[in-house]
Image (cartoon, rainbow, N blue to C red; front, side, top):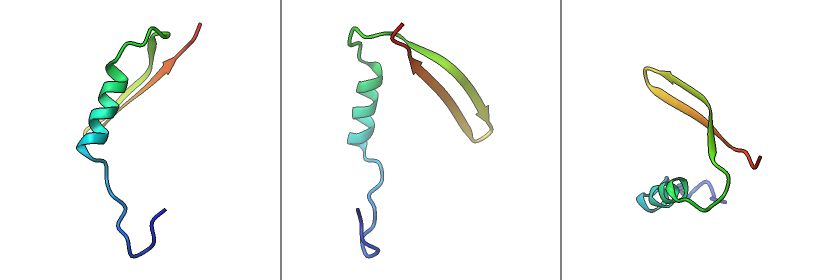
Length: 53
Protein backbone atom coordinates (compact mmCIF):
# COMPACT_ATOMS: atom_id res chain seq x y z
CA UNK A 1 0.00 0.00 0.00
CA UNK A 2 1.33 3.40 -0.94
CA UNK A 3 0.84 6.65 0.90
CA UNK A 4 -0.32 9.76 -0.93
CA UNK A 5 3.28 10.99 -1.04
CA UNK A 6 4.54 7.87 -2.79
CA UNK A 7 4.01 7.11 -6.44
CA UNK A 8 2.79 3.62 -7.22
CA UNK A 9 5.28 1.93 -9.58
CA UNK A 10 4.04 0.82 -12.97
CA UNK A 11 4.58 -2.51 -14.67
CA UNK A 12 8.28 -3.15 -15.24
CA UNK A 13 10.06 -5.01 -18.03
CA UNK A 14 10.76 -7.75 -15.47
CA UNK A 15 7.01 -8.00 -14.73
CA UNK A 16 6.25 -8.35 -18.44
CA UNK A 17 8.95 -10.99 -18.87
CA UNK A 18 7.48 -13.00 -16.00
CA UNK A 19 3.97 -12.76 -17.46
CA UNK A 20 5.15 -13.83 -20.90
CA UNK A 21 7.01 -16.84 -19.52
CA UNK A 22 3.98 -17.90 -17.48
CA UNK A 23 1.64 -17.72 -20.47
CA UNK A 24 3.99 -19.47 -22.91
CA UNK A 25 5.35 -22.31 -20.80
CA UNK A 26 3.81 -25.75 -20.98
CA UNK A 27 3.30 -27.30 -17.58
CA UNK A 28 1.41 -30.45 -18.54
CA UNK A 29 -1.87 -28.98 -17.34
CA UNK A 30 -5.10 -28.61 -19.30
CA UNK A 31 -5.12 -26.60 -22.50
CA UNK A 32 -6.21 -22.97 -22.65
CA UNK A 33 -9.40 -22.21 -24.62
CA UNK A 34 -10.04 -18.83 -26.24
CA UNK A 35 -13.46 -17.70 -25.01
CA UNK A 36 -13.71 -14.19 -26.43
CA UNK A 37 -11.72 -11.99 -28.83
CA UNK A 38 -12.84 -8.37 -29.26
CA UNK A 39 -11.14 -5.34 -30.76
CA UNK A 40 -11.70 -1.62 -31.07
CA UNK A 41 -9.46 0.85 -32.89
CA UNK A 42 -7.43 1.37 -29.70
CA UNK A 43 -7.87 -1.86 -27.72
CA UNK A 44 -7.70 -5.61 -28.18
CA UNK A 45 -9.18 -7.94 -25.54
CA UNK A 46 -8.96 -11.70 -25.27
CA UNK A 47 -10.52 -13.87 -22.58
CA UNK A 48 -9.04 -17.32 -22.00
CA UNK A 49 -10.24 -20.22 -19.87
CA UNK A 50 -8.22 -23.14 -18.61
CA UNK A 51 -10.77 -25.90 -18.31
CA UNK A 52 -9.61 -28.95 -16.35
CA UNK A 53 -12.08 -31.24 -18.15
